[in-house]
Image (tube, rainbow, N blue to C red; front, side, top):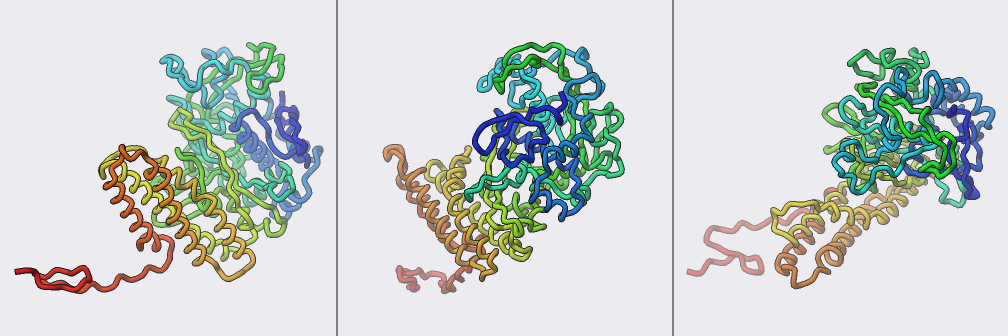
Length: 554
C-alpha cells in the first residue's frame, strides 16, 4: 500500500458526501474538508498534506506561490509532484516502510495491540493496575490499513512521552498546532486546497527556517529510509543542522514496525469499512531519534522560556480569545513573549489577503497531555477578519490595543476570582477556581470579537484610530460582565441559609472598588484621574464626616 497512490484519505465534498481519495485529489475544488472518524486524525491529515505539499512544491517565490493559490494544480500535476518521493510512502512492503523503523522486524519483540497507536488508549500499566476507568481497554482491536497508517502518522506527529527511551517529537509531546483556515462564512464554500496551500510557504521562505539544504539524501528528509545511525549516533541527539529542513514534517521519534503478517479479515473498528487485512499488532523498541536543539516547526507558535523559544502545548482550560494575539500576531510584554507559527506570521507579512480577499480564521488544535496521559483534545477556530489587508503599521496598532485589552481582561478575571473566593471562604482558602475564570472568558468572548472587528475594519480603511473609544467600551463591558457573574451566577443565587451575608457584602464592595479603580484603567492604557491631595491631619485631631479636622474631645 503506497500512501501517495492509494485512495486512503477521508474527505467531505461540497454536497456533503464522503469519499476516500488519493493525495493527488486534494486540489479538487469540490473537496472542502477532511472527514476522518477522529478529530486528531483530521488534524494529522492536515499536517500530512501540508508537509507533503511543502516537500514537493515547485513554488520558489511568493509570486509562484500566489499563482498556485489562485489556480490550483490538477490531479495529474499533483501526482507528478508527489511521485518523486513515492518510495518513501510505502506502508507495507519488504523494504523501508513509511514512519516505521528501518531495522525492526515483526519478530523482534513482544507484540503490542494496535490500539497502542491511539494516543488516549490506556497504557500497559493502566491495564495492569485496572485503572482504565474512563477510556476502556480493547475498544479498538482491529484497524484497516488506511486507519493504521493514519494512526501511525498521528502518533509520530504528536509523540507524547512513552516511558524510558520512547521519545517525543521535535515539538515535544502533544504540541499545539495553529493553521490558517479559509473561511466559508460569507456564503461561499472554500475548497480544502485553499486551506492547505495557505499553510505552505514559498520554498525560499521555508528553507530559511532551519536545517541544512545540502543534506539532500532521502533519509535526511524521511528518516525511515535508513537505519537510525545514518542520522544520529548511538546515544546521541538529532538537531536541525543534522538533517534537511523537510525533516521537520517527517520526524520519527518512535521506533515502530507494523505487523502485516498477523492480519485478519473483517470490519475496521474505527471507520467501519470491511478490510481483508486488518492490523492487530505491532512491535516497538525504545531509543529512537532524540530531537534536541533549536527546532522551529512552522505550524506551531513558540514562547520565550529560560531555555530559549519553546513550542506551545495545549493547557487545561482550552482555547479562547486570550490566546488570539499570541497565535495571530505574536506578543511581547513584561510577562511573556509569544511568536505566532511561521506559516501564520509569514502570511500576514506578505499581505496576500489584501490582494485575494480571502476570509480567514486560525484553526488551533492539539492534545492536552500530562506526560503520557491525554487529558483532553482541544480544538477551536478564531476569526482574523481583514487583518491581512492592513499594513505593518496598522497591524502594530492592533497588536498594541489588543495587548492592553487582554491585560485588562486578565486583571478583571483575577478580581472576579478573588471576590468569589472571599465571598465563599476565608481569605487564605486554597483550591481550584479555574471554573470561575472559564465562565469569565466565555462570557466576554463575543464582546471582545465585536470590538476587535471594529478595530480591524477601521485599520483596514485607514480611518482615525478608534482605540480609545473601544477601550472605554471594553472597560464598561468588563465591569458589567464581572458584576453580573458575581451577583447572578457564582454568589448571588446561592441559598441564603448557607451564605455569610456580611462576608458577601464585603467581597462585593471590594470587587466594585477594584473594577472602578485606577489599576484596571491603567491596564487598558486609559487615563487615570489623579487623586486629590489629602490634607495633613495634626496629631490629636480627627476628621469629621465632611473631611474637616476638629479637636479631639478632652
